[in-house]
Image (cartoon, rainbow, N blue to C red; front, side, top):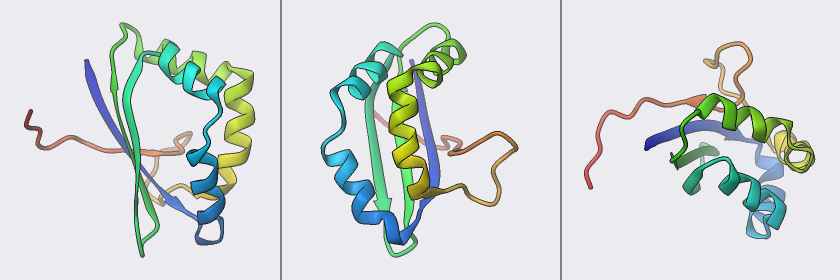
Length: 109
């Protein structure tokens, strides 16, 4: 199992829309997340900085292939077309990144 965390900025004018979308996430999106071996997925919001932190556990055998399967899914693409305009990548992301990956520096079960 891998634990992953990532961060992105939430555009303040889109905050209510983003919260509304996630309060009623589409069943097809939830099924795709599960099919791609993601478990215990949470997104946290830090105000007033408007930072989103996503955290999840990956329980599969090929993370890159599962993430590509998610990216190729038409329903996921429709979902991202709604959620991506709500977000702004951090200035420090590498080319091609949307959410900035975070390093785990401590964990305790």
